[in-house]
Length: 243
Image 1: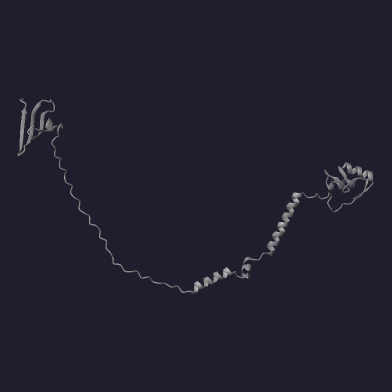
Image 2: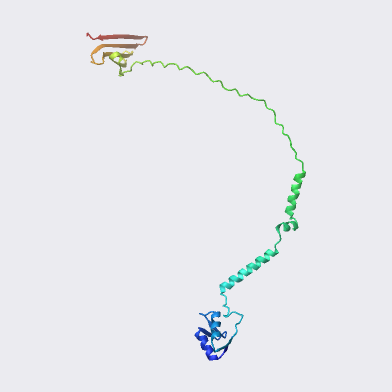
């Protein structure tokens, strides 16, 4: 509260940056603190007296909507939490004082019955079966490996040629077989079979002829109305080189 001459005091307040607000009927200062303003007013001769109001120098600013809502929510949550905490009981005391539920009573009764019942062991007798001894198979002796016998050389067939080289010699073998059947005008039947084998020996290096041997076997069968005549002929021919 400032007392004194009206116009000089208003001029002083305006010079210090004050603004008159009709809504609240008070002067508002933005760039000046309360202590500095009181010091300036007391030092002016136009001001009769200065009394400080214990309340705030500036009116309180109304809180924003979001701030008020958050404060109210926080206070409500705090009040709710406090009420819940005050209304809670200790877990041990709560469990001890609360009456047992039906399912808890049934569980306790089952446990007591299991503890009271004696443990019964029923022996089971298995049928006796004779023991069977398994015989281990005896190891069989290994068979001695027999040496492989050389294969016998089969005689060459018709038109087959075999070459050997024993001791620097060249041997060529060939064979031929033929058969013939005919029916004559008088009703007789004749069959002729002929087999010929030939063997030539020559020098492997020079190719000079050394020896030739041929064997011819001939078989002839003639069937007539009352008899069968079979004739066999073997002809052996050997040719040697004069050198």
